[in-house]
Image (tube, rainbow, N blue to C red; front, side, top):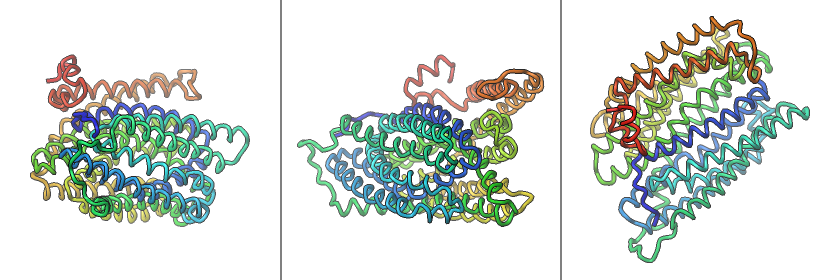
Length: 541
């Protein structure tokens, strides 16, 4: 049987978060120079390919790994070793079939998909990306097994390896192709190759790590009688399909967002193909920054599902509520300041990271920054409800939010006076609707409603003070240092220095305010590795 790690869900999330920080650092090393190599048009091909890939990946991996993690967690909490092993075996064959189907479709019809998306030059990238679907499906099986035992370490290490390989291969290929004089569509395909190779590296590591760390096949001392293969497959389908449908709808909506935005710019807002692709590329660059906070919510999502499921199977309803509330509160503590900081410092952020996008980019990032927190909390509530046995409820929220997104984006982007700026407004409306519906359903189906002040009140006040401080430092220093000469990596010091100091000021002010207002407490810190020792040094009570 697997080793008992004794990780509570926040302990596991803390381990995963350390890995996410490394992944984000490596990701910045990858995407920022890549965006500047490909330019706005090449980055549009890159972004559209990812939207299509994410659609197929979501169909293959969104619901079933979560379902497997939940079934393994429930069986492990009851010491049913044979049941754990059979769930794993049924899961891996199911994921292989789904992944193979997704890969086959992408490899067979890349040109047709690119044409439907309105970006015919993305066909090469789609073909190169196709094997990743199968590779990620296999990887997700092993990650689900480890996470079902509340062990985040293999997943964390695999993601660091995956991102590191992507940086080396993807950035190296894109840079070499660019210097060799190839077109932007070929350069984008070279960047995508990094994703495929990195998916293979992550899969090989996860297989090795799980088989080394766990006795996957139960020993002779295991006496429990597992359920039939048919019953386990049905449970995976029963739990996984509603989650897959819910998440797939969101992926369809994100794909439609790209298609609608690009086509409305071309046909309703009056832009030609190149101008529309340029605006779309700028939007995708802003989306790259916008997606950073959502990466930090992934550790909480991965950890909260088995924790809530294990509490539910013990019929500990108050523990379910406390676990859900703690996850939402810690998610707020991490993601809300990132979202507010993104909005407040949108102009210098885009000017430093993507100089070519500094015209429309800041306003797009400002709108997306406002949206970001609602997006992360929607993701969190979408995971809590299925873990609590309410697999179908997020589907309602996602459908309503998705319809809102499509309608608002279609109307606003098609208005020449709004154009590309309507896309993030549609996203904001989408997640506001989704979060509202999920909170309503949680209040109805859990032992008590979530305490929203406890979740976001103190962090919100801390963020408000942080935003004022960061904005003041940026404006003051940028005005004083406007004539400063010199540059780093082509960025003028008159931008880099004030931006860096404004970010540092925001981090310090938020940290001080969060401790002063007790947004994070000693009890919270005890849930993290060595948290009590850190709390004493920082005088957190």
